[in-house]
Amino acid sequence: MLRWILGGREAQGTVEKSAALFIGEEQPKNCFTEMQVLKGHFDIVRFLVQVDDLSAGDQHLSVCVFQTGDSLIELRGHTQQITAMISYTFIRGGNAHTALITASSDRTLSLWDPDSGNRVQNISDLQSPVKCLLVLVRLDVWLSGGNELCVWNRDFELQCKTVHHSDAGISAMVELPKNFIAAAMDKEIVIFKLNLSGSDIVVMAMRHLADHQDTIHSLIHINDGLFASGSHIGELIIWDSVDWTIQAYEHILWEEPARDGQSEFKLNHQKQIERSIQHMSSDGEYIVAAVGSGLYVYNVLMKSVVAYRRIAHDSNVLHTVLQRLMSCSEDGSVRMWELQDLPLPAEPASSGFFGMFGTFGRSSKQTGPPAKKIPEVPGLRSLELIGDLIGHSGAVQMFLSFKEKGLVTCSTDHLLIIWKDGEFQSQLRSLAVFQKLEENQEL
Image 1 (cartoon, helix red, strand yellow):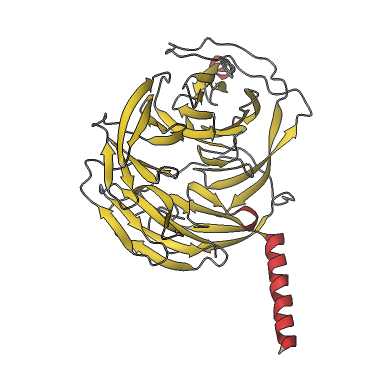
Image 2: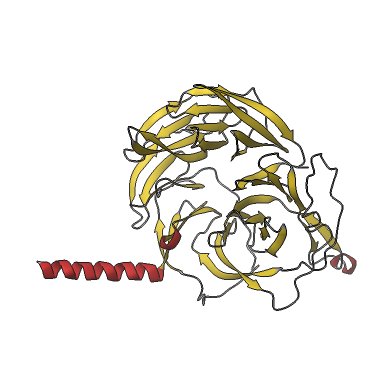
């Protein structure tokens, strides 16, 4: 049975829409032809977390069945918005158990049993709210990050913690080889090491990587040898996971024409704009980055851009996935994309765009990469819109894929929508009919 937990949190401003792209009703490559709207939340739904084929959100959570959309259990306990959520699977008594860990602005951490709906553990004396969570399966521990980094065991017992950090705190974490952790803290990435001595664990800060010029918004694992970070001003840095050196550096810039209604001189003026990297995802070989309202696809191994679209949505892109190239936005849309060979020469890149990709081994802070114009990017492909999933009336926060079965989206409109592959669902219904007929014949 596919289950998932959901929830929501604080409100978000209204998005002014414009027609950046329009695909029309005929979408032959869009397999999501069936949808089911789930109502029940009274606040923004911002999180979806899969737990043993499961998902999550705000001051209360719900466990739902993907195929039917039925709500099985509501988990209530937090008094303020949920800030982080993660599933935790561990072995006890020879059997695998899956639990859900949630953090809230009310400065609590909770451990939930998704089968019974019970809150198994709760910690309410935290010094500050937790912003991110990370499970280390190999060590059978989990970490919470905020103004301090804490290490916990499966029984919710604190093993160790770091000293108080800045007000910015730890916003994201990724696991590195040899018991190291990379944590994003404002403009820096701090490398922590977990030292194990018998049953004791000690966490220590080993190095501060201060190569970003602005706040880091995204930190992701790429593969066993690489991880990546993206900043508020469009800096994308790919790091070596072992020696923490820079393997590639990008400062994503482009030129934006001035608005209508200005003087003729200003209409012809091109202004350079920096864009924030809100989200990134990777399959180990490629990275797709949400940069402002645009999308950028990189080949990590070749250290080159594969495709980009500077306006992929009418507003900021909030979530991306590479498995089936998709994105969702503040404009309320969920879009499907396809990489296609360019029939015509690629759109010329502006000064500073992909200017430093392929810079290796930079270990000291730079005052700013030199601008470099690249008129042609070899092997560049186009990013074509092949599907537009319209159903939400508010910003779509994220989506959760259930592979061939479909996906779930959550939004500021308090709704969840299950999008299903129409052809696959038709096959399931036909199979159910044949099984029923066979059962009747046996009777």
